[in-house]
Image 1 (cartoon, chains in turn green, yellow):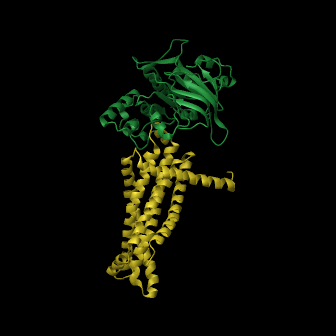
Image 2 (cartoon, helix red, strand yellow):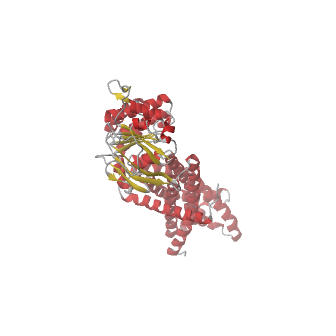
Image 3 (tube, chains in turn blue, yellow):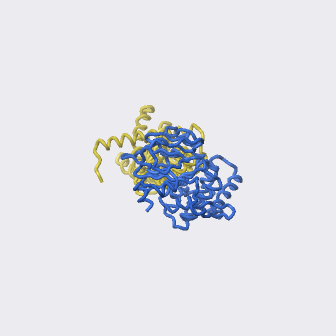
Length: 278
Length: 260
């Protein structure tokens, strides 16, 4: 885990044994100025990295670079120790199955039931139906949506769709989780439910993850709370304590301007960070 | 909106042709390597084949009918109305059956493929599929292409049959001519090269319809407006390509099997 209080310097991704994700000087552009420029960071095993930044700054692009959905123009990306920036798409597919991804609007398949959406990978792998049903029910139980088993995504609310998307991402017990604005466009109560699920995954399964958000409230909740498995709900950490495995990255106009802990973020002197926090 | 320069437009066109060629080649070659998604093939065959039967049947019937009406009026000037059956069957089987069926199926299915895949792109379902370790080309595009090729082959036979039937109905009930003579002329005048020509064309048309529909669907950008744009481009380009390729295939087949 990188726990620097200062703004990150380009080209300084720390070397961490078993890091599921390492970025080295990654840049990407789409017919214009760079969307991301010289991005370097890493994710340690069991670490949750919260990627902050205003809308349109390149957060989702960065997340799609992590599992090879987009290719960088320059720099290198290591996913589970393998260089993926020039890897052929066919070779990327097995690597991607080791990482779960939750998309901005859920990205559930409209024509499939919740059961088939959650079980998508298992169906493709021709897992027996009984086994699929058992694992889908367990995943839906995790997100507390057992009753939606036979429903279609169209009949679910926005928050329920995100929770089904989380269940889909978890079904194969991934080694890395990528959340793309999982609370975007949701009401505060539903947002808290989603954040509680993210926290549950972090504290119960200890899966490393990257969470994109522009909502400071969600980010701070993740840092200042832990999931209590006995009470089956999140509880606040004692005053002054924060989750040591939850750290922050912040983007400004395609550049990484902060990489560090909550304490470092709150005491940063970077004017953009100050403005964002205020 | 800024107007593109001719140079930029030409570059875009070349780039689109290049992208389409690579896309169509990859989608075709996927059939020869694992994994293959046969259930998807069957579902698409049902949607394209069974779903298009009624429009192909009706368009074939009325095209045959109008051919009989038009030809009888002209042929009567030479006292040759007896060859109406020959005229209708050869025209339907060699040309109008394959081309009209192709255009009807393109209107129905290239548009549906472009809009369905386009919607999946803009709602990130295609990215989700890739993130789940499934190749959308293999899962969505290749089954559609092979379902379209195989179904268009049979739909063309249906269109030919109902075209000749439509011509027969007009000949008997409107032109008050001899029915058995119409059908015997329609049958006797056919040669194997005519049938080969009529059944080779839908193989190309089927490939064009599905590959163009999927190509424009998969490269959709710009939200719901982009889906509409992709749908229009898919139908227009598929229809034009069907007619262009029909011309080229006809030219080649006439060289291989010259008319008597």
